[in-house]
Image 1 (cartoon, rainbow, N blue to C red):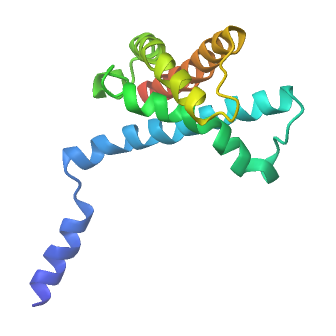
Image 2 (image 1 turned 90 degrees about the vertical axis):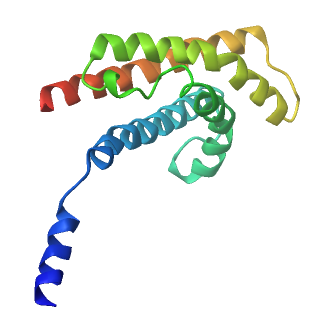
Length: 150
């Protein structure tokens, strides 16, 4: 009995390769969510709408269609491939291509969720560029730091 407890405790400390491979994806998902929240917060602040921590629910509602569009498309565009972790240039290129693919979906979702059902061209361009910058910077830094940690 004592022996099985020791082996059981030991097995809890051993991580399979699949478990170790999950943390970068989980970190990317968390960082991506934060990136969209920052985008929405900056946008709301620019338009003099509630944007502080007290308005986090409104910020999340604003960010939701863009994040949802990203998470619906980006996995199929390869944005979460293991080979990107620790590869800054590849991470940046894949992130930008994935956002370019997700952008139209995000705009359609924004149109569907928006009370006025409008997505002006100027807004669409700001969404494209701002999220490309926010996602690109965050994911580039992630790839740089994971490369240096290896």
